[in-house]
Amino acid sequence: MDAEKSSNSSFEDLSNLNEQERAELASSVPDATQTKALDKEQPASGQQSTLPGSEEPAPKEETEGEPECMDILGNGTLLKKVLKKGRSELRPESKDLVTISYTGRLDDGTVVEEQSDVVVQIDDVEVVQGLDMALKLMNEGEVAEVTVNARFAYGELGLKDPTEHDPVIRSVPPNATVTYTVELVSMREESDIEARTYASRKEIGNKKRLRGNYWMKRQEYNLSIQSYRRALEYLDDAVSAGGMMESGAGSVELSAAELQDLLDDRMKVYNNLALAQLKISAHEAALKSVEHVLKCQPNNAKALYRKGKILDAKGDTAGAITLLQKAATIDVDDKLIQSELSKLILKSKREARNERDLYQKMLGQAQKLEQKTKVAPTAQNNESSKIMMWGYLVGTILIGVVGVAIFRYNNS
Image (cartoon, rainbow, N blue to C red; front, top):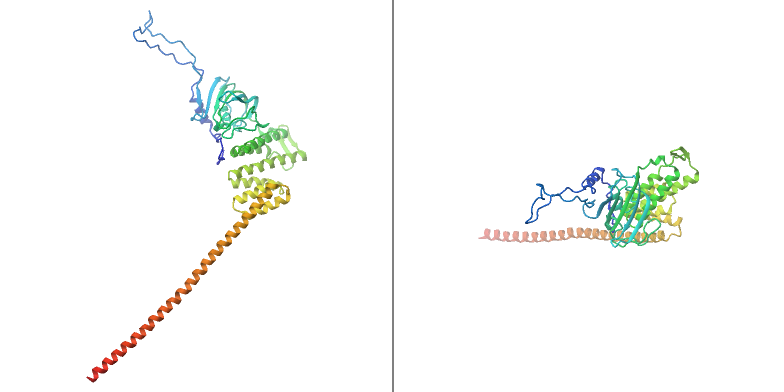
């Protein structure tokens, strides 16, 4: 996930761990089902060190070790303990589809989540992020206990209002640790998108779009962007310009209604993607997303509004006002557009007034400087005139004195 999480985000993008790192994590934990090595019994003080009739120390009775706990992230925020070994050594990889059954409990034992034989896609955050990460370290058929810190579960927000998209039985309090008992029932690779039917693509694409909306509601913008981009893989470029779609059964011609439905779904995703990107200040990416909408639907009021918000964030207030005015004429009942337009107009007037005041201030300073420049030569000329006058006067007196002296000298 990006850059840039929301201030109350409780999730982190750790989906870029490569397979070698995952393997190293897994191999660093001993097999929990292996028995411990036999220890030799130490003799007690004052007792014989060997059993009667034997020269060897008596071995302890063999015991099966307790399951080892894997600290997946190395900081205690995500722990995994094997309860039942898998039937194979196979583990799911990114984008694989897994069937799981799980129950999530709070520290006091309260059940907050419970699902049976549900299919989720690895790395598509269709379950809480901590459980998603742990699934990649489970073998097929394995049953494990996964303890997920609030940071990778429901975070500071908790879950106050479960919806139809949440398998939550009860609300989750803020900053709650959730412990899952999860079984990895089965796994399979994701089939090629091109091999899927139109109905399948539409269903999966909209499922991921709704998951993106779920993360948007929780202000987890990076996770919502991840879900929206995956939705576009199913809804984008699914048909050619001629309305033909490649599927497992060959080229299929779509009806006008199907084409329109596909377009509408795609525009919804791009519109929401632009909003999520705007929330994390990814302005250029948001602009590209909203342009996809306006290219197909130039009078989409929501897209015009969001492009206006993007331009305003980029400092183009005048351009933003133009777009919002157009959006307001298209959707005259949208109070949000009207309110934002009023704010931008006031902002524009304030910026114009500040610019005018600044210009006047700069002009006043320039005039003062010009006046000062004119006064300086005048004063300098006055001083020069006075010096010259005194020079002439002194010179005249000196000439007179010299003349008198010469006259007296000649008559003496």
